[in-house]
Length: 226
Image 1 (tube, rainbow, N blue to C red):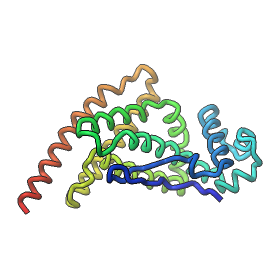
Image 2 (tube, rainbow, N blue to C red; image 1 turned 180 degrees about the vertical axis):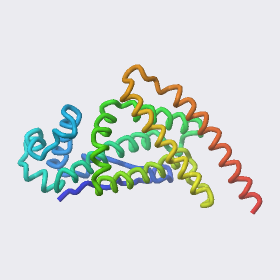
Image 3 (cartoon, helix red, strand yellow; image 1 turned 90 degrees about the horizontal axis):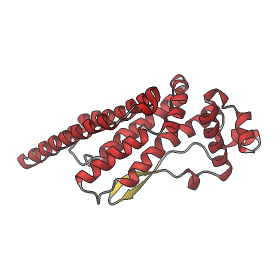
């Protein structure tokens, strides 16, 4: 049985970054079911996601959905994984140790923009979210995924090598950057094409430049004084 999977992590230029490729890890039938569920979610919303509807959309037996995902909650976990991890994997592919500090930051901002402004992706996510928050297992999955996202944000910004005494501040920074992406996505949903996230992202970039410079300078000074 192919259960909803955790993300994999690969080493790229000495850094552990997320790699997410469901086509390479899910059974073809499970992948077909997952893609069918995502199509139904986009076109008809969460309430349309039933095992019968998914089986008809995917062209498989209803029992196949239960076999690969257990139930609707298991399938929702897999879809949430797709939404969160696909965005993270796309960012990871663009951010590597070969980039300069400026290039890394610009790539981070550009991909945050892309993730938050993906209307189809975010509409699907926000359709699932209220239900996920009321389901204990789905909520736990979201906690796990967001914890990964916070850590990855710090890696992508090149701040993961700081001493342990910076852990609390770094976690707050990871949470802050995720909150900005989520907030932009909400405003895109509200305002549609009228909303331009570019000014907000320019402020985020300026903020990250200042924070990164301060933290690295403070860490370097502390290391010299030891």
